[in-house]
Length: 337
Image (cartoon, rainbow, N blue to C red; front, side, top):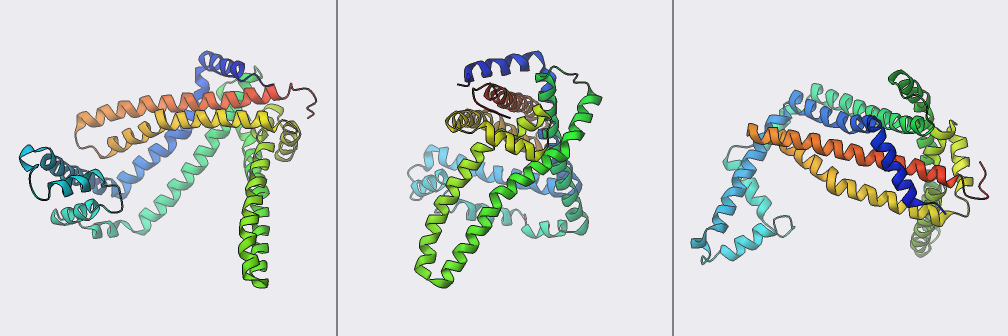
């Protein structure tokens, strides 16, 4: 049995002793944030969105002032306005239509966005997207590399870390591609079979959809569990994509229950991170981008830095726990490499 409590404790202790291992995760989150900031300001989209936020807040305040005024409670349309405002996110509410009308009255014309659809902005968007994807992937690879180095008690200097990251970059990419192929290839075959059955018999084709969907979900779950440890296997054992897949496949044989428990623990950490760090981070970042008050901008900047550090810490802890459970798994009796 994998000792989850011990792996938790070991992960936390190691992270406390080697705080700098959060740096790659920190940058993997920071890079997209910086790119969004740059694009909004270089493209001219930022001022438009800031104006939209200000006008929307003004409209919202007018609604709140009306609803909170006791003198308006007895009016004929008050109850309707209250229900409409409280349910503004529902499809039956007319709040969005009223806001759109208010924006028109304030000369906030949506046609102003058309001038931003130019070659320069489209090219810049594509470049920034590529930088964001490549940067996040590179720092994710670096995060796994630095954890492997720490666990194996090797040097984690900058030059060595960059060298190890570069060595594993193509391996990690090929691993993602291979796993994607393992998942997508059966799906393409299933779609082809369903289409063929539809040509033979419509009813048979409809029935095959339900059967194949169930079979594919079962296949997806089994493959996901069997290939669960491919990433730590690659970085700890220093091997290629194919060997990592084979190793994980053998490692998890007859131990799917344990893998499932570990998966739910990691999933729980992810939910915790999104609730207590991820959502507050991006909410604070949005306020930082579009607030007009310098005091509020400064406060939100501090909050962004705080939640960015917290999210980096928790995600690194998640990766550490993942690697520790892998190393624990290797000790289980009967497992072969």
